[in-house]
Image (cartoon, rainbow, N blue to C red):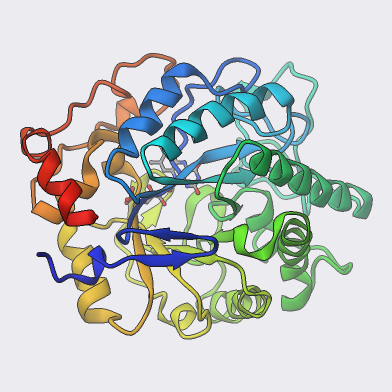
Length: 374
Ligand SMILES: Cc1cc2nc3c(=O)[nH]c(=O)nc-3n(C[C@H](O)[C@H](O)[C@H](O)COP(=O)(O)O)c2cc1C
């Protein structure tokens, strides 16, 4: 029997996972042109749910077409999307695993080539582009901000209708919520900017409103305090003060979890950074999900040696793309199949998506695994 805390159950909101290895949200762009999840996506999620008791965070789902468009990512704003997600969620539950929806809107982080020629306007907290060759967003009015809170709420209700175990509010990686949190993208001088408390306000309002609509136990929050992806990252001291404020508020509300991304990850890439998340570990008392550059060895070290006192689940992103049986491989120390960046996105094909095979070790020990986790 593996004694690592990675294989101890953990209560996260309304669910109890059977182990502490999960799948982080990774956009794979296999939805249809109306942002409706596809049968191919069902197959993909089912494969990754195959070790019972696993928590999957589904890839980011748009809360509205008007507020953000990215090629072939799914949405959760229409009845068709909700119904299609439901059939995926049902299959994951049949496998005795769990799945949260991730809700986001891209804000300023869109790409010119995808959006040019479409009836769509980039919006953000301020008129500040994230790179010289990206569009300058329109600074949102207070009414537009409140509208967005409502869109998050509606998408969260749709997620519950689809049977998701909860929703993860995407406050990371330079998308709309993150751009409100950080001063590099938020230069407002109204109640949504200009001070730590004001920059936290939009995220806090979204969390509170979503929690009010679907229950606090169903709400998680994803943050990437140190990430430089899509033009983000404040000065070190400011980062700690800003995120301390928001995480304290999330802790006080009692949300199901926070999900923190390590500094060594910047979106799709590894970067040579070692800023620490410990400041956040000491504030948030509930379960903490962590992702960014984890391997079997680092995951075991984190939960067994570095933070044995905390309830931490380690989320894998890229390695889950190429290892449908990743949880088994961590447990049995089986080498991971390398991921291939060219497969990640922008293809509607099953190639590099659902054609990664289960290891011989997994296939040969299905019975043993069932016993270990029962
Ligand atoms: C292709 C790709 C798409 C991603 N899409 C999302 C997403 O939709 N939502 C999100 O919060 N993070 C997204 N991420 C970040 C991952 O969730 C994760 O934090 C990151 O890959 C670091 O973990 P890893 O080192 O295990 O891959 C994405 C990463 C990649 C490589």
